[in-house]
Amino acid sequence: MTKRTPRLDHYSECVAKFCAGLATIISRLQRDEPAVQLLTSAPTDIETSNKIERALHSLLVFDKATQSGAQSKARSFMPPPQSDVVEGMMETVAHLVRGSCWESEFWLYVLPCCPCVIPSRLIEDLIARDVEVVMLAHLCLRDKDLWKLFEIDEAALTLAIRRYIHTEYNSDEFEEVVSNCVKRSWVTQTLASYQASGHEKLIVLANTIYKSTDSELLLDRADPDLLHEVMRLRSP
Image (cartoon, rainbow, N blue to C red):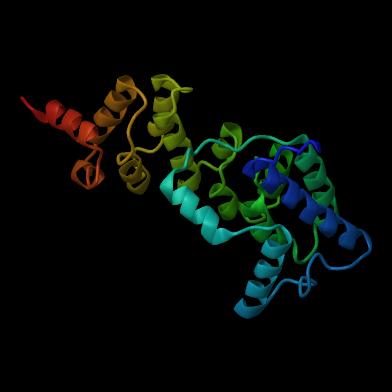
C-alpha cells in the first residue's frame, strides 16, 4: 500500500508558494531581467502601477481579497512566524533591488505578500533610506520594529491592540504604549472597541479616556466593559 504524504497546512503552502515566487524574481534579476514585466522604472501612471501590482501578486500567489476577508473576521495583531529560508531569500532580493529606480514600487507590492514576519534588518534599511515607510507601518511587524515606526498611527495602533488583547503582555507593557497615544484620538478610539485580555489593562485605558478632553469621542463604539468602567470613574 502506497504511503500518502500528509498535505501541507495552509500556512506552509503559503510560505512555499511565496518562496517559489521569490526564487523566480531572484533568478530574473540575476540575469538582468525585470522581476515582472513593466518594472524597469518607476511607473508614472496608475494603470502601469496596477499591472505591476497584479503581476507581482500573481507571481507570489497573493490573494488580497481572501487575506482581507480573513483579517476582517479575526486578526491577532501578532507578528507572523519567522522563517530562516524566507529571511535568507529576502536578503538576497534586497541586495539585488537596493537603490534601483523602481525599488519603492517593488517593496510596496512584495512586502504585504510575505506570509512571514519581515526581517528587522530590511525594515531598518528601508526606514533609514525612507523607502515606503508608511506602508511598513501597516504591516504586522515585531514590537521593536513597530516602535521605530511609532510616529505613524497605524504602527502605534497595531502595537497598542496587540498589547491590549493578548495575555503575553502585562498592563505595564500596555500602558507603555497607550501613554504615548494620549493625543492621538483615532488610535485611542479604535483601541477602545477591543476587549482587554485583563482587567488591569481595562483600568489603564479607562483612566486614559476619563482624563481626556475628548472622552466622549473616544467612547464612540467603545467596548461595553470599558464604557462601564469610564462611567464608574465619572460617578461621584
